[in-house]
Length: 441
Image (tube, rainbow, N blue to C red; front, side):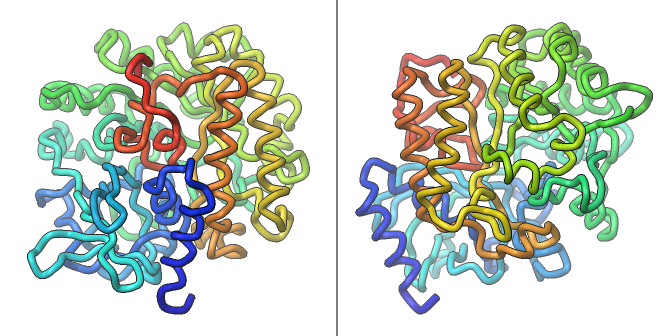
């Protein structure tokens, strides 16, 4: 990219899509392409004043730890918040994805204040999350709260990756954009603490610390997730393995948090067990809509369950949870990934919108994560630039339009909607929805 060209691209898209908040244009660009950090903008890990990146499930980086330079030794912040600048940005929370060669840089100015720089120009003030009090306390066995129960989305969500690896293993089974297994290996190789299967009692102890010190009650929800279980872990199938954490949490902290589980699309009686264990929201992620791409990019899911059966199970689960509380995720951008993806933005948007219409016509509101092309994944290697920014901006427009077509409002468990309000950090779908004071969050 020549000098100034990224600024020109961003401004062109803002002009062409005036209904998409300008905050979301920058946020999507930072999520799809990452951001570089000057040493002045890195955290002091768990000993500092800034909440560091916890690597809560995937790496969400554009390089392996050894490639990140100082950012591998001193972690960047978990998230950044953008405000002000020449575009007068409203408060925008962005998940940090490190890319040392990104045109976006976070650095301290002469006054010591952090800013976001693009093409050499300061485009926003940068805020970083303060170290939460509960991260300063250890579990009785010496483990850190950040390792067992990190919080993201500016403290809104406790992220419980109960199982750090996925049983869809190797090239013939792993989803082609997912680095969960590699991320596990790289943390182990770097000698970082990274627990494979989290002990239920450890999770409860970490939550006790959070509940005690989160006096502002900023944490409102927890997500239980991890790799797919195709056989058993500790003698338990997927519904019982993840469900037991919810059961323990709900017994110890009744009603304190909204309980969510990200798992495979399971048969209805398994889904019922989640509900019986106290889970309130179910995320059976469908990953990518197109039939051929699902086969090629999610080979394990195709082989064990199959796309049609996966979708049928998603619809069936609404009878257990209610359509509002079934919120499947897709990975926005892999539709355009070589070698098999769509080559035009029009085709990709048409396909994805067809999927949105399918689910929204049943009252289900999917959500999405902006694809980060991690270099250890087949699709990341083949597509280091990710999907074009225009795709992401048009998806936000299509998403909001489809929601309006079916009379749906922002899904529960994501915090407040609207530019300036949203805390959901891994895509801009909440930033692009209308702010509505009447919707419970």
